[in-house]
Length: 278
Image (cartoon, rainbow, N blue to C red; front, side):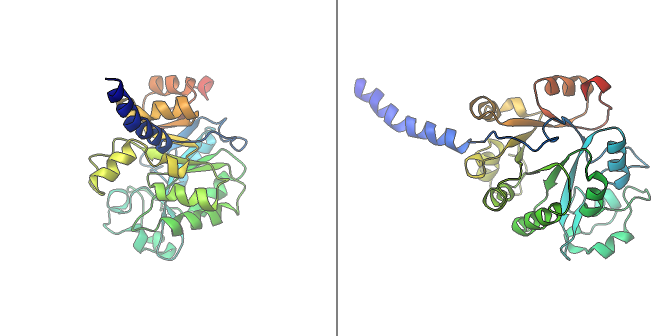
């Protein structure tokens, strides 16, 4: 029996240490004004029909109400950076074309959700937020363009005085930042990804359980609040490594307030946080 215990210890101790290493996050000082600001309007403070998601009108509304904003960035064919969530414009602009196949000049031909708002470039959004509230910038890597996308976003951000952090579902984006721009606050986006179907099931399982963290060393984990309690890894990352948690997407004030009081960054939509919570 003693030999069996020793054998089990010999086998499982290294596996346990590997598991904890794969979850390794980091806790370090954040830029002034970023972590202190806990409320980020999801794709801007959008409300149809006058301010659709990820529009300049929605970002202006967030600023006018004192919120930071979360936004999504794609790399276009000509190297410009478009602020839009989906790669396809079918849902947002009614045309089944990919933003990656367009140039900046083409954006004048598309309107968002039947409004007069067009798809903005990232530089237009940065012009609005310079010297004001912070941004959570999600990078949408497509067709293995993670290196080009991340490098282009960083070059543009260097031209602006904007408080920001960068997040992505794609750990390759975070790994590029770790190697090339380690000073930038980076975050791993995740949720229950096992049904996504775009990647090998083992990859989706690993991403669901945050097992890329040992390679990318994220400063924060942005997890879907509806599924966060299904998996223990987020709790381990918070308790063992002290990583900052961001919660998305909160659509009711009570839940958002509770998570905010626990120290989470809140990415919200569909309601207006109370003044005392901001």
